[in-house]
Image 1: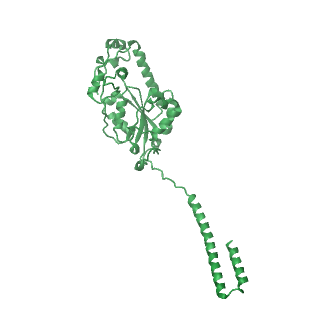
Image 2 (image 1 turned 90 degrees about the horizontal axis):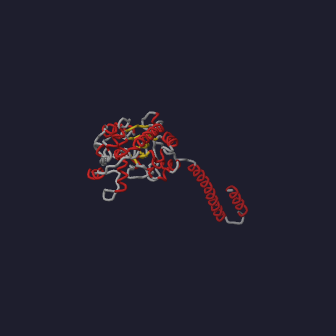
Image 3 (image 1 turned 90 degrees about the vertical axis):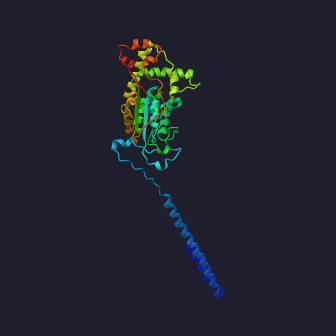
Length: 344
């Protein structure tokens, strides 16, 4: 088009050359030449600009992935780099995070154990997430909740946010875990979630603790407030005054039921990466806490808790109908529970 314009301009100049004076003719030719040059330049610049924009549009900015730490190949599935929707991990974005779940039963020391873990600056254990029934209503809501926990998007008082190196939750066996164990095991293995089993050897003591806690929920002896865990010897002494009466006829069936549930949970989740702990062992041997930190691959430090044990000493001082309990368990596989004592 630019060439056609220039031809028209040339023809016009020739036709009118005889009618104009030389000076006027030169001025017209110069003006038309300038206009023609500007027009041609504008077309060239537009074409160059278009090609340049296309080139930039096609370029994708690729985010450099985080380098995995120097670990063995089998362990890579347990190393994660979450990308939370609710906040930025900032300078900690490439710090690896490991996922875990504490599987336990009520009144087995899991609350105390979790406070120990949360005293570590790099561990976030978010409590009984599935005590909220809607979160465990079906496997879809369970998976959605787990995704939020492990992506660091479920914020609780235990959250360490961007500096978290191990994140997890406490999950009671009766909170949808056993009913959906196949899907949950698959989730754990697929997403690299490690399992921490925490149980109580002396399940008779556990039963006493459950009955006492149930009484406290109704009576509320601590100034009208129910507390499952306390932080002072004074509060512990008040709660320890109550001595439950155990149904002797149902005692052995109840103990057996708990044993079977624990055995099944170990069977169901044995294929996951796991560690098995017992409340009594942690109390007697504090190196167990070192084993847990090594299991979670976090730096070793001294862990601590503000919780104070409520029931201490001989069981004979903690049950109202001790004679009936002793008679019922004598000669059974549970007789040893009558004599196992320890202090916190």
